[in-house]
Image (cartoon, rainbow, N blue to C red; front, side, top):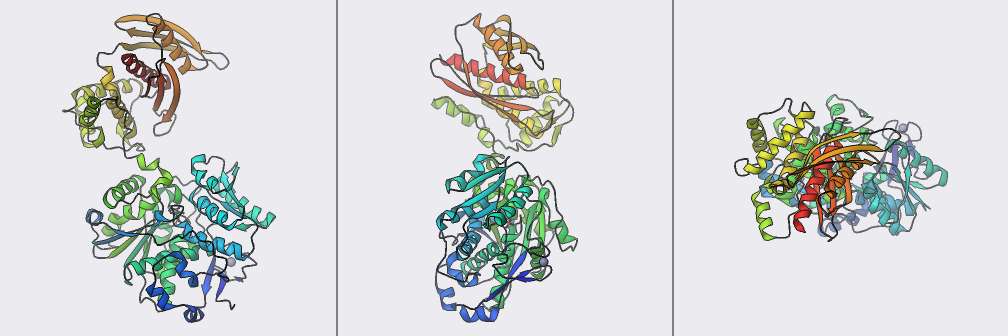
Amino acid sequence: MTTIYTIECVKCKTQFTEEETITRCLKCGQALDIIFDIETLKKNINVYNITNTPISAVKYLDFYPLKDKQNIISLDEGATPLIQSKELSKKYGIKNLYIKNEGANPTGVFKDRGSLVEISKAVELGATGIVVASTGNMAASVSAYSARAGIPCYVIVPDTTPLGKLSQSLAYGGNVIKVRGTYADCVKLSSEMAEKYGYLLAGDYAFRGEGQKSIAYEIIEQLHWNVPDVIIAPVGCGTNLYGIAKGFFEWKELGLIDRVPRIIGTQPEKADTLCSAFHAHEKEQRTIQFPSSLCGAVNIGAPLDDMKLLNIIRESNGSFEIIDDTTVLTSQKDMAMLASVFTEPSGAIPVACLEKLKEKKVISEDDVVVCIATGVGLKDSHSATILFPDFPAVENSIDDIADFLDSGILELKSDKNNSEILFSTKPSVQSIKEVAETLFGFNAEKNKQFFKELCDEVFVFFERRTEMKKGEFQAILEEVIANTKDETNSILKIIDVVGTHYLNKKAQATVTIDFKGKEITANATGTGSVDAAISAIENALSQQTEYKINLDDFEVNVQNGGLDASVRVKITFSDANKNRVTVTGVSPDLVVASLMAYTKGFIRLYKKQ
Ligand SMILES: *Cc1c(COP(=O)(O)O)cnc(C)c1O
Ligand SMILES: [Zn+2]
């Protein structure tokens, strides 16, 4: 078969054969591009077929750099929905706003379109193994396609990667290798491994990008052969958006469409490798050593396709924008609530940028705008809960459900990750009330008991600290709402705790409690401070009651980082009757937070006997 494409370095323009390399330029290390001979392509394609058959990624095989169509590895990717929601359009002030829901692909992410081409190419080249560096979505997609091709797949990840993120890849049979190093180290190692063992190196390389073109083709068809005015996508390495843009340009060259949309790249502020470079008229990225956005899929410091993407965006008369993580989470919520598209944070970046793009007159309300929701929300279920309070469990009774609904906790606003300073001195009752009402939607008038408890806890907090962050206030507010009911007429109070700990000896604690109006003091030692303090309470209680609770599970979360951060302790207790309860305590001090939780757990279980 005649070759209808060549492989060329985007920078030094050296050409290579695919037997030589399909990843990076062997001379200068820059990205490679696939250049089609448009005249030959024009003769090969079946326009009737293109315009008259339903969309799917495999429909566009003629546009991919594959020589042999006997080896296609497909999971029926593509044909993802293009969704329009009146409510979302109205909220963001764009009359014709569309969401291309790429989460509907087989592994939940657009990368499956690229894997179709990349792994089919691997079969064509006779690969005996496939190696990929990744921390999540890429690994899952490449593992799934490798499994289908029957080729072993090796996934190289930093050892800090949580297992949860790798579960999908493991399920598809990916061989996960954890490396003591950073993501950049893994990229380097994967390429060394490919060379040493003769494996195919998968990742953000030119053949994968070709597979992403089908997003453009499908959008054109879904809009009944009208080209949208604007395409907006999140950018990590730039491979996906470059591929989409290339799809539009090639179809224009082929005469299938008469213009291309303006291509807009978007990134989180904390991983802005390309936006500022774009606006400074630079050709290459501004590398970031430690990007820190919570949008994991685009939290990338050194994008591989920087030159390709910056170039094609300029050619399309497009632009670049950045946005903060909190706005992204808000848009993620809007997309789910108003359009029923549940996307991971990265997939919400385009919608989060709409306001800014309108303000800067980069887009207008009359433009036909397509935002790419790149991956499904289930990929990162933790992030999706940041803007929601932690809901407490209610007792097994309809009265408790009624109390729960009345408490207003379902309407509470949340921003757990927010480390903005809320109070820089001890606040007054009035200012606590204002903050609780305006920022968190808490009704102080309706919930007088909760509010009193909230003020008390805030004041106790300021005994120890001189300022309070937004996330800390929220943790206290939630904890109060979850637990206050138990504290009314409480049978157990902690009056004081004094403790000592040592480097090489057991910790000691002395605790004074009030149990049913009686004051008792007791001591204990323990492996650490928390253990000693809890054992001391248990010793004190055992002087008054036979009733005992056991600690089943103990989880500590640090609020908003830093050495002086407050901690939120979550403990599950049970008793001999198999009653169980999970409670929380929040304090800048780990021992105090644990004792608060213990008290609540004890009171609640004691009442159940
Ligand atoms: C990989 C990925 C991106 C970034 O795409 P690039 O091709 O690296 O620019 C965005 N969102 C999701 C969900 C991804 O998995
Ligand atoms: Zn080169």
